[in-house]
Amino acid sequence: MRSVVDPARLDRMFFALADENRRAMLERLSAGQASVSELADPLHIALPSAVKHLAVLEQGGLVRSQKSGRVRTYQVEPGAFEAMESWVARHKTMLNAQFDALDAYLTGQKGKRA
Amino acid sequence: MRSVVDPARLDRMFFALADENRRAMLERLSAGQASVSELADPLHIALPSAVKHLAVLEQGGLVRSQKSGRVRTYQVEPGAFEAMESWVARHKTMLNAQFDALDAYLTGQKGKRA
View (cartoon, rainbow over the protein chains, first blue to last red):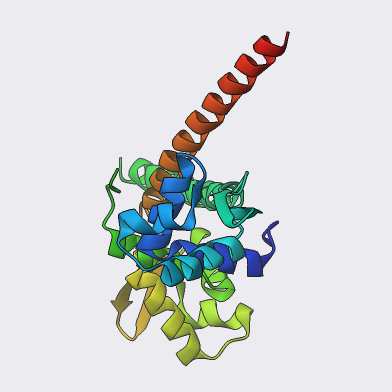
């Protein structure tokens, strides 16, 4: 079974999430849009470092940015978590089917012993 | 708001998922336990490469292995996706609250214009 989402996109998305500061930025943006300094300050990281993290989040399709005058504002990409959710849901379905089969097998074994 | 899951654990979990071959292995394991060669063959990757990928998945808390005689068998870690699901669910709640606030604001603006 192939993923419905572009594998390279999933690679970039999961990689973007594999960092505590980037997850904290996403958490902050979940509460509303923010500028680079508003995102950097609470994490006590330098602006250039924040800009790099935001670029990784943007490449991962998790945030988008918009420039208004000299200020660049970031916001969560609408539907950012949908790709991940559908991926997790698909795997859970497979896992549950596996557990059901195991359960049926064990119930069968129990019947044989009785 | 702090995550209930150890940040370093989330780092390792998301990093483990940021690779197509590792995701394919997890997908294969969702259908039932398998040996290294059973996981490597369909992906056309060498055994040492498969072993490395499996170590990353194990460090990410997504799979576990068991050695029986000379054969090491891998299976999905029970509850592997729970940490991710709770993380996604928490962020979706925050995002939805943000959309609701925006919606209320826009409805208010519409009322003013009417």
